[in-house]
Length: 80
Image (cartoon, rainbow, N blue to C red; front, top):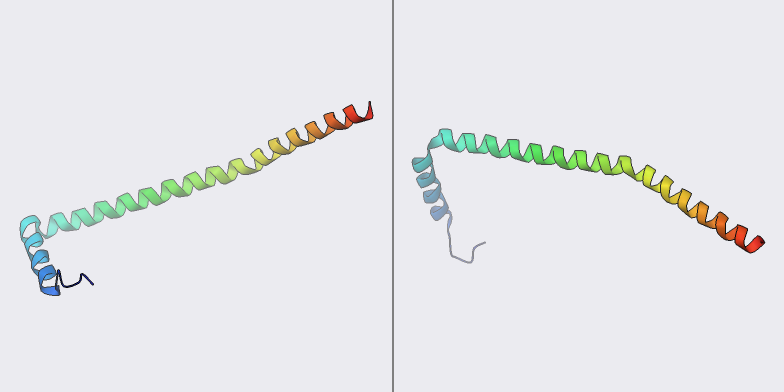
């Protein structure tokens, strides 16, 4: 996995040192805060996608009116 740079023992020792330095409460709080941040990010993305999908039919309608208006102008020019 790491081409021999780290073994499972290195990772376990690192985990023990982190637990000793920060304590289990701070690590648990960090996990909870990270979960809340991810949840907020997902909700923001969902809201942005909903707003974009709500605007899409209106944009198509406006674009359709513009295209129809241009076609009518060109037809009136060719008929005249």
